[in-house]
Each structure stands twice: as structure tokens, then as C-alpha cells.
Length: 195
Image 1 (cartoon, rainbow, N blue to C red):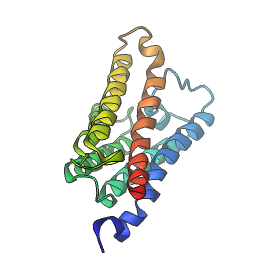
Image 2: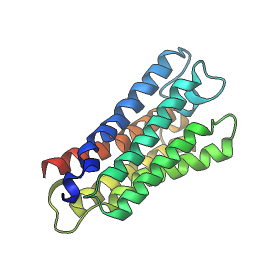
Image 3: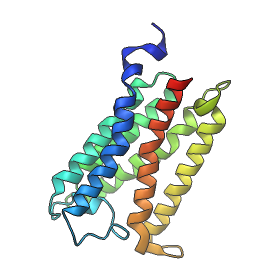
Image 4: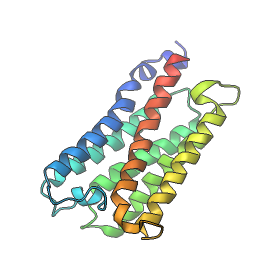
């Protein structure tokens, strides 16, 4: 049995698709349960804070998303090992964000979020294979990393209240970034299954 048809590789689409579905579905449900929440200005961490109406929804969502990232990194054998390792670190950082609410452990939460966002933006730069075509080509993977790093930069600027809109769009920039980071592994998994 080769690397692409192993049981792990065949199951890879499950966690890869679960991550974006759980993340977007979870933050949508958590926001619906907290009608005073501002999804454009507030971060998703506010939905998991202990003072939120249903912190377990967003906390559970982040935990599932982090575990899904780690399972995807383990399962996708065609991605280069450095990319898989950094992707798994991003998943572990996301899981740590779930376990460290922003209002209970702000410094640790911030550090875990920095690890998660950084690793989930950078892993594609280490994932491509020379000579591959399609989604696993070095050019495609590095381009994806460039887009994710740019989105991370916009989020950091909003978080620091810098730029044309500043903190008024922190939540929106975070959601765009997090959705793109959760969706890219699914694109890779489904794209490599076609190859």
C-alpha cells in the first residue's frame, strides 16, 4: 500500500473538511446565542470567554478545529514533513486557545493564538514538493502561504488599532483569516486526492 492510499490518507478528508465547517458553524452558533456580540469588531475569543453566554460552544469549536488540524496533518502523507509538523503545531496552538480563555489567562491565550495563527499561515510554505503539479506544487503552496501571511498582517494591524479601519474590523479580519486557514488544508487534501 503506498503513502497516498493508506488508511490515514483515505480518512484525511474527514478532519480536513471538519475544520472549516466546525469553525464557521461554531462561531455562528456562539454569536447567535449572544445577541449583543459584535462579529465585526469583537474577536471569536470573546465568545469563548467565561463571561460569554455559552462559552462552551466556542471553546468546543476551537478544540474540535485544533484537533481536526492535527489529524489532517497526520493523515496527509503527500505533504512534506516540515509542512505537516508546522500544520500540527498550528492545530495544537488552536487547542491551547480553547483551553486558555482570554479572560482567565490573557498572556497564555495570546501566546497560544500567536502560535496558532502563525503556524497555520506558514505551513503551506513548507508543504510543496518540487516537481509536483497542482495544489502541492511549490508555487501554489508558497502563494497560499503568502495570502495567509498577508491576511495575518491585516488582522494584526486591526488588533493593534492601526490602519484605515483599525480595531473596528478586528473581528471581521480575524474571521477571514481563520476561515482561510481552516479551508486551505481541505483544498490541499481534496486536491491531492484528485492527483
